[in-house]
Image 1 (tube, rainbow, N blue to C red):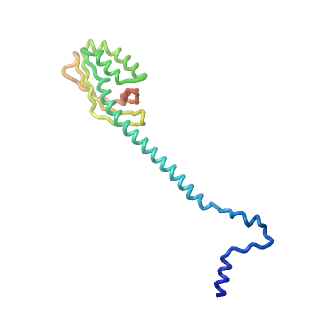
Image 2 (image 1 turned 120 degrees about the vertical axis):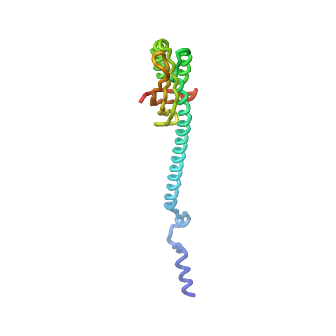
Image 3 (image 1 turned 180 degrees about the vertical axis):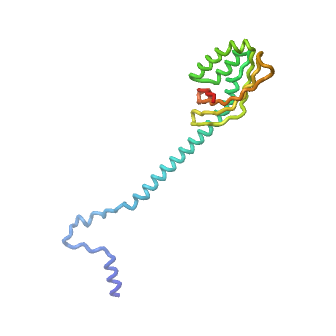
Length: 187
C-alpha cells in the first residue's frame, strides 16, 4: 500500500509552498502550440497544390477547346481566303475578308487588289480544299494551325485543271465574332 501512495504522490502536482506567490498559482499554464504548426503548414501547402492543379486543368481544357474551335474556323477560312473565281471575284474577296482581322485584313485586301487584273485577264478559277489540319501552338485566345491546302486552278493558259499543294500556317485569334485569321504564312 505504501508503494501505491508513493506513486500517487509522484503523479500529483506539487503542493504550492506557503512562501509561493499566490498570483502565480492563479495564472493558467501557458500551452505550447508548436505541435499544431506542421499540420497547419501541411494543410496550407495542400490547398496551394490543389489550387495550382485546378488552375492547370482549367487552362488545359481552355487550350483544348480553343484548338478544336480554331481548327474548324481555320479550315473554313482557308477555303474562303485561298479560293476565287473571275466571275464572282469581288464576292469571293468579301467572303474571304469576313474570316480576317487586324493587319491581315489590310494585307489580304492589298494582295487581292493586286491579283484581280491577272484573275480577270486569265479567267482564273481557284478552288482551295483543306486535306489536313493540326495545331502547332495553342493558348486559350490564340492558336497557330498548320493546314495542308490543295488549290485546284483553271485558266485560259492551261489545259484542264492543275493542282498546287501548299502548307500554310494560319494564326487564329479569338474575337467577339469568333475565331479569325490574324496572320498567314506559307511554309
